[in-house]
Image 1: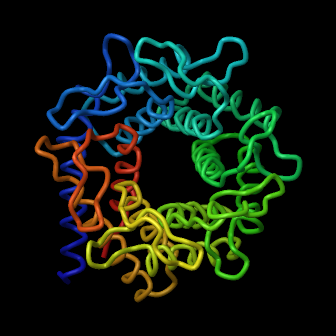
Image 2: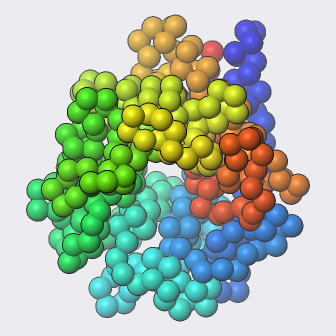
Length: 386
């Protein structure tokens, strides 16, 4: 067995064991709130829940995580976490007047942030797709499409894409569009209707036409109301983790559509994120660059390491030669080894979220929202073989 094959097998095995034996149990047994419902936002490093205000995206992401765990063959508890997350989305987090979701709630259900948040609704649609994939319950499809149709009705941009609020507030952002794209692909894979495909196609083309820099191919984050990069420093920000994530999504879309233009954009995004946004000394993808590819913020968040893994898995899947495939697998394994650096908590199943530029980690509670990134990356890595 080659060295790369050994590294691949080792990381696949150790990550799956960590996920199944440690992470999934603790994020339900400690992270699920049996009394008030929903999920705790964080777990302290001593293993106690951190009972702070709760973002609706966390409940949605935990539904996704435990639904995916079920498809991966995890034999621990999955149905109760899925049920509890769905109950939070349809109960405390739901605005009974218009059917939209509150973005942030206190643990007792009091609304902290009630205005529309595009990002949280994208994750709600992903949650319903994930639950539908394992249950085929038509009420889940109805819930997902109801949110989608309301957003199309109330928040469509006059030309393409979606607004952040109504009346409009700026900047417009690529990140919620990325997760809307992700939700559309999940629904298409789960058997959703053609409207998901229409929206996915619109977002994919908006990305290529407006989000990407016409000269460098990099992805911008913030835009004015006409989809021009917003003036000033905000318009110059690049997040390497999002470059990897868009690359992963666009390669999935390429496989669905057969259109090579999306793959070309994806390859460029991934190359930028690797060449300029990943520190070879720490084996870690950094948080932010400027649009000249100089480093803006050298901290490294855990989630970006998972997106690096996922992007390289899809490059391997799309490879046209054995050499290309092997190089992509090497990239995925390197990303997986970088991810494992974050699993340094005294209590197994928890993790660090932020690596400092010197390679040490911030001491802070582990965020529940990150499990979604981790389980997806581990599932993707499991598809590779040499």
